[in-house]
Length: 368
Image (cartoon, rainbow, N blue to C red; front, side):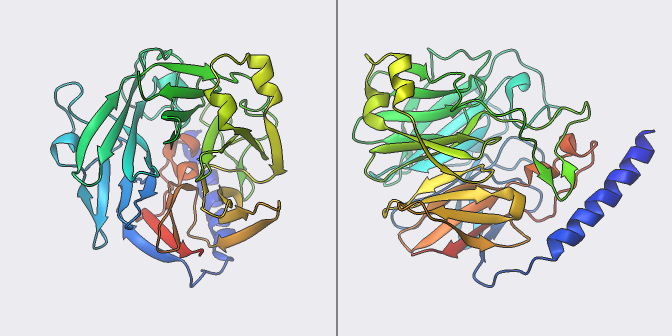
């Protein structure tokens, strides 16, 4: 029976690939780097256009955090932190997201949720009842880790920290937590954290929204569809607005950061401050530019969208190579950089068959 299912799946993927190939490649899309079978996830860019890319701990695992130098990845900040194993707290466990803040500090979210809470589904790795979560601050002038946060207040049995942004004015980190279906706010002055807007209509994925790629629903071997609560997030350059949405949802929400920073506000009052910004697309990653535009990855049609302040949604680039565009960063060179994680091609969503198109890549496209 499994053989028959595999044959049918291969036929469906072949048909999907034919539909994908019907799209024309955009000549404006440029390859930044190629990584063979190593899956890129997080991407961020410094003010002087240094490009950083993270990789989850999946084989073939070479490093968790890299800087792209002359088109090649170099272990960052050094090889020791990218070792496969070592003393606890001295190496990256599973680098998930990256963000360069307004002060040119690189923040690294090292997040390995308990297997049951991972948005990627079970990947055959060792089961764990508790996740492991750390946030690192790296000074890009010295290339040294200068701060480390351990999320001592977080429910590590349920959390699945995914994306993060740094508010340099209020000294806060805002993180999406699909596991707790909430926004986690980390105080960078004392290391305390709290979860807000948990299990609300703004943070919960809709069961009715099933991701489908060219006629094939994204389901695991038990028929359970892919679902992620609040996932992609963005922070405006002036630190005034925080944007967020679940993957299985097309509405984009935002809230003023002054409300997120207010520890005295009640959950009910906070929920009233959430704005339903616009009907958008199925999105994995978000980023804001200095003009107030919000860029959104759009995997169902192999594209990147832009939502301008006047509410106009346009396509920045559409290309058959953009399979599950994921994390984004904007350089001072006017380019938008982003990874293509191909999550929908992973074995757990394809009858244990690896359908990824190699090599994995990070791309860039001119936007300014």
